[in-house]
Image: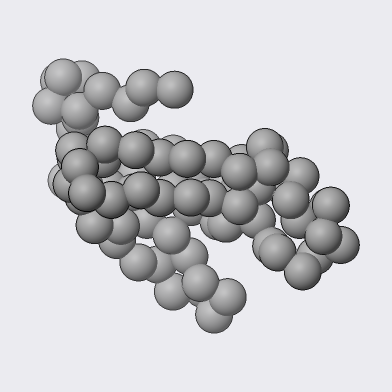
Length: 80
């Protein structure tokens, strides 16, 4: 998937949420080359954290299939 910068979409409200919180269906999802801010991860207590950006970062989301395969040992990563 490719998410173009919000600036390419025209006028966007400040603090707009691009995608509501969700988990990915796959086993794992790799996010590389994050060049813009906005991705957030949620911990078990419900606190949201901004993901740092830059070419030196690799973000790995655990998906629903990994949750199922490990019988809940590895939970899917909630993100937005």
